[in-house]
Image 1 (cartoon, rainbow, N blue to C red):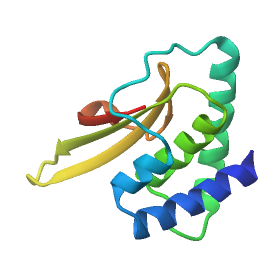
Image 2: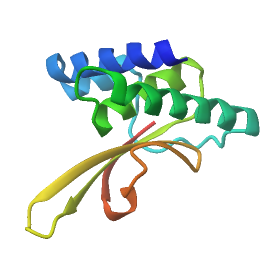
Image 3: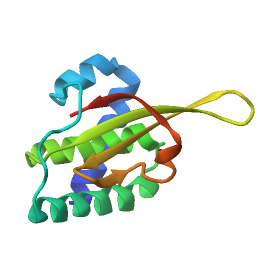
Length: 128
């Protein structure tokens, strides 16, 4: 799973650089909204393993793997296993007045990537 995470982190980094977001959404077969399906205990365990793999590999990759790259990589891994996913995009106004964007990935109520501080962001789009 670690090698798969490294692969998807690389693929998504390249995809973000060279493809439009619309193209990435189409390739991953994402649709607007949150997943209505509730994962069972075995699916949550697999999702947690995906979180571990993405979190373990992200700092070891020699290129930037920010929240969007990690979220898309995790989404690809979940999609490959036919697990429910919800990919959130949010914005927050910082103290100096500028906006900051963030992405986080969930499987059911389990936050897999981008979880640190995601509560302070207002959701502007969700894909499943």
